[in-house]
Image (cartoon, rainbow, N blue to C red; front, side):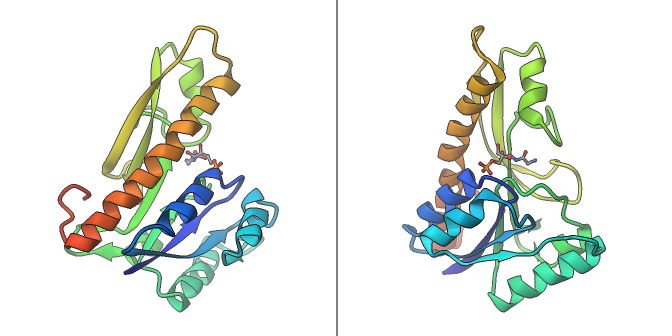
Length: 202
Ligand code: GAR
C-alpha cells in the first residue's frame, strides 16, 4: 500500500475523481489533499467528503520556505507519490529530488496537462489549443521534472475540435476526457505496485 497526496489549486474536479477512484484501489491509499489556495473550490468538496485537506498558502513566503512547509506535511503523512491535479505552481528541483526514485529514474510526482504535449506547455493550454488551427487536441499525463510540462509521458488521449465549438464546449470535452484518463493512470500505478512491475507505467 502506497500513500498518495493530491495537489490542487482550484475547482478540484480531477482531484475529486482521483480521491474517489483511489478509495476503490487495493494498493493505493489516498491520504490527503494539499492546496495553495484558501479560496479553492476543492476545500468545500474535501470537507463534504471528510477527506483531509491542508491549506498551505505561499503568501509572502519564499518558494523554498513554502515548499519546506509542504514537505513537512508530506513527511508527517508518509506520502510516497504525489498527483498534481490543477496545481498551478512549478515545483522546484529541490522539492522534486525528495521524491526521486532510483529504480524508476523518475520523481514520484505526476501531473495532468490539458494539451497533447509537447504542444501548448504552460498556462492556458486549452485556450492556446482552441485558438490554434489544429483540428484536434489532447490530454497528457506525465512525470514531473524540473522543466515546464517536459517530463516523461505516461498516457495521452486526443479529442476533436468541432467547427461549432466554443472555448466552453471545447474545454468541457477535454475535461471529461481528463476525468477518464487520470483515474486510469491511478489504476496503472495500482497494478504496478501490486505486481512490483512498473514497465507499463514508467
Ligand atoms: C485541468 O484542466 C488541468 O488539466 C489543468 O487545470 C485544470 C484543473 O481543473 N492543469 C493545468 O493546466 C496544469 N498546467 P480541476 O481543478 O477541475 O481539476
